[in-house]
Length: 156
Image 1 (cartoon, rainbow, N blue to C red):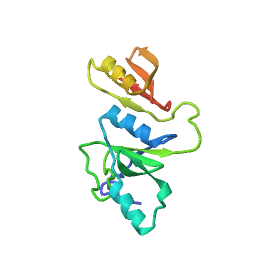
Image 2: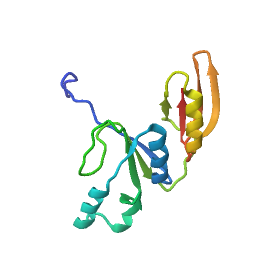
Image 3: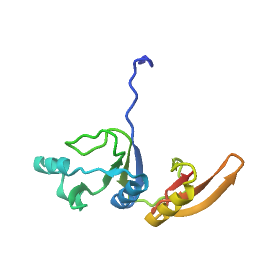
Image 4: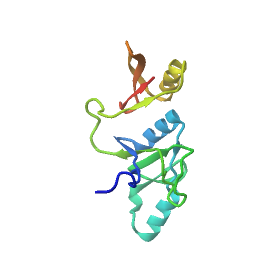
């Protein structure tokens, strides 16, 4: 077993199953002020090598993109310039055939800052989110929202 004092933290990303990865990336990129990843150079290399079939790609934002995957990354975090893939905080949207069913077991809490909750809820609504319910409890208040595909988030 590795010594916890010398073990390096594990790199991670959140993966969201969805019906339309590009639409989700557009929404969440705008919602979080994140950068949508540009994998065009990687895809061109994979196509040239015959390692990726053309039908696995689409044109998205006037560039080649993976048909079934697209990520968004924090604009200040490092990324691999050859692949366009973020190396820090990122969310990957992955196409799946089945629709969302039931409540998310994992969701994002968005904290726009003191006094900014109402404005943030309005901004997210304009981007395509919907208000699920407003919560006021003894330890605080927040708004439960859903993204365009129904994935929950909370705005505090």
